Length: 160
Length: 409
Image (cartoon, rainbow over all chains, first blue to last red; front, side, top):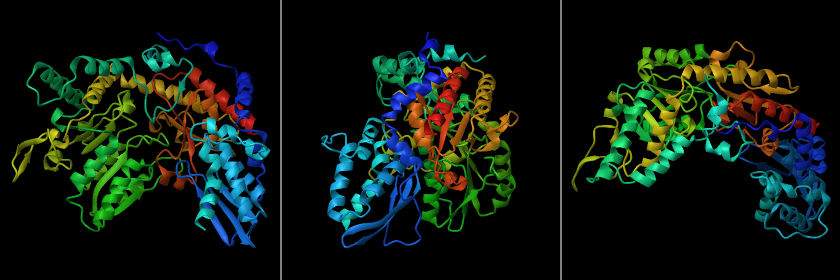
């Protein structure tokens, strides 16, 4: 016979505290801040490149808008809907890639994706913004949220 | 009376995980010891292939296996076991009806009618059939409260309609559709009806004979049984006319290099060695469920749902999808599934955080993407209850939801 052990459960206050402890790893300030105040979050009617990052499993869908001028990514913005992690990671992408050359972009992409890759070797001097997403790899099904827009951009640049 | 704490004790997963709060019963239920032990007993004491063996073990296993057919028939009020086809699940049952029953009679320009709240399993097989035959898939719209638009249902039925396929209880909204009435209306037009009972059969009394339904499908794993088994009930007159679509051993009367004749009964759809352990496990699941009075189950689940809904609606910015679920009076049309959204917080973030609290809920489109598009939602968080859930567990979820709100603001 298995009785529900009430003392195993926490009070609302304890839940909030525990949640803050365990989840602050996943939802670091960086993620919550970028979710609430995303960088260059604007829909554009026209852009040279409109890239769609779509996760068919959960329905998250972002569009990246940008131009490539003199081998540099410029006027980068994004719009769409997704969870806190996918939205924040797209915001971080926009923040870090605006004005970067295509060669620099490839390095930055690699560096970010390496943070979430469970087999990735930890690099030194990783951007704090990137490091915030590290915990996503410990949550089943959530690492795709962190890499959604980054994968889409990587794929675009590789095919280009 | 339903005693959830005692019931919980019959499920080994809760003994092994005492702090697990499992609210994902619409996806799959946990399994009682009776089912797990039954399957173990089959493999340890009875394992042999059915129908073919002459030795005692094979004969007794065949009996064990075929007894379940009668058990299922009794469970859903079917006239006899000859109308019960073993499948691999709800999806397989619908595909079988689409390919074997409807495919041969469907002409270009004919119509199949489904509702806007169908699971992909009760949508795509019909859509594929329509594409292949040049037929048209028509969809009954739903109201904002998550109920079917009955006047439009009647209006959409036409002489071209060759099949109506409806979900009994919506897996996304919890709406209970008035299937008895809807079947009667379809039959007034001479149209056969398939009912997807995946979400209803565990909790509601089903009487396929009284419903006069043509086909009724469900899965074992959503009624405390194992995965990989399901049931297609079909009126015998239909099953007799249907041609098998899978061919092989164990379904034949006579085979020569020139010609094969098939068995007459449901076995003609069960080519090859089936999931014998699973079918036997399903039999135990039905035995398990038969211990309870379905009216008591519904009474208890109504209590749980009302309790949860009232507490959830106290949370600012939380909205329950399909308002049929709100308030205390609409209980006849709402099941034990609650889909909700929270302002500014994505369903996946909610489910991740609840997951950290060992509260298992589902987030996403619940295999009803067109329904989510209709509701203009990217997805919802869904809590679905059954007989081992308690108000105490709901309190824990409410606390966690309040915590999530604080966390994100």
